[in-house]
Image 1 (cartoon, one colour):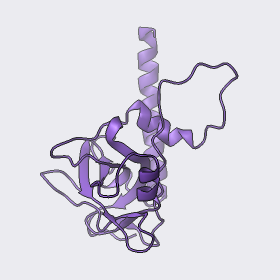
Image 2 (cartoon, rainbow, N blue to C red; image 1 turned 120 degrees about the vertical axis):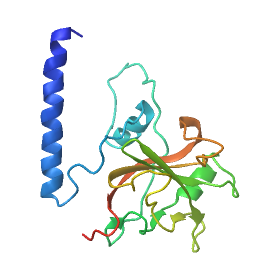
Image 3 (tube, rainbow, N blue to C red; image 1 turned 45 degrees about the vertical axis):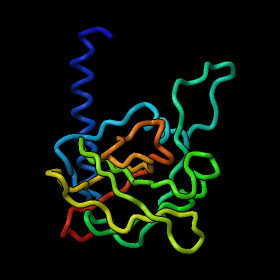
Image 4 (tube, rainbow, N blue to C red; image 1 turned 135 degrees about the vertical axis):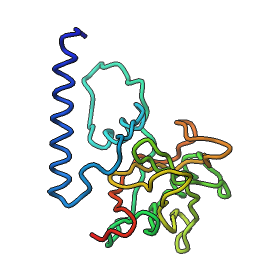
Length: 187
């Protein structure tokens, strides 16, 4: 890339961020929920885009990325709020077992990415069909971190954040995202 393009690219980036903030404010969402955006790796970005890709050009070389198994969040009738709302991951346990990614008794965690912060929260098998995972309440502020707010990304993983950290090889489902309101704010 030519050095002269960097100034142009940087100015486009700042205009696009202003557009995003304006649209989020118009939708009554927090225009700038965290001081930093959330960086995602290639596989995470590809996992988000894969649902929209129908085919590649004939003879195209395979991409060096892989999509994680899709994550399905059961839609809540209420706004998601940091520290309180619950989330159900529909069919996640059954899909992960069928894909050989976990066993019946493997502990699983919802891993949330908000700005530069990462939150690990244990999920449990729900009653009913035994194939869903449920998180009883979203994380709030913890370990000196701000609560996850705004557009927050989530994956399911076998990493607990203490003995193991999130990596592509321990991600069993994702990437999804939630719009999370700060504690005490109502939609």
